[in-house]
Image: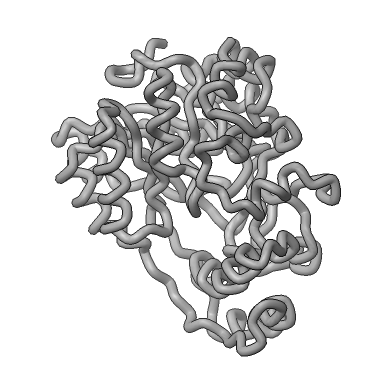
Length: 340
């Protein structure tokens, strides 16, 4: 099924939103100018910082781009569990900060309402959601403002519910995806099925346009998901080492480091499932509790200090299963090489 305007004008390769830095305005601008749909990542930013990035992309003359938001979907951890996890990670947290102390337990909503208001004010062309399903009122409000909506789903059931709530399109995220899984229930991990199979299953329950995402780093994987019924194939890890990526130097170097030989889904850094390269921190805390976003805030200083020190053993090295294919160079060359 053809994608609805304005997405139907793009090439078949899109760029997935990656929170924490990689999805820089430079990356979105370069990809869009080359004919690829790309999105800014609104997660973890202040509303003011997100508005500044939207303005930068708009002022660069990009007519269509997206912004991804984290739907408030907290999975609280009690004070005792939070303190216990701190005791388990204290030694790691002190590696680059001798005075490391336990951060207050936070269960924030990532400025959800404020960011929604900002996106409507700016008439951002496309808004996508992950971590949960907004209310039908949110979809109606954005539709009234002329904004296209995309909902991340990881199962057939989520796809049905997203379509019923009013989403205009779906991102079908597979088990191999790097970074956070969009699975709505953080108590569980996404089902381990091939992305093409998941796309086929979702296609049987909805006619909405589908964007396949997760572990796509080669042209044959692109063809596979398109043949399965996807309208676009979205890449993330494949462009993490690109010139325009805002990923840290520590993260980029780790993706090419022979010391890292596998990825896994882990809650160790944020309290909800995310795929990362297996480093010392992941190995030590494979049984991390559910506790999002509290654990994200708890480990944030440790991760920032380690990143600044170039110590990849304590950093959330988000990576999809095809991370070995990630190459350096202009993002345009990387994306165009993947076009079917």
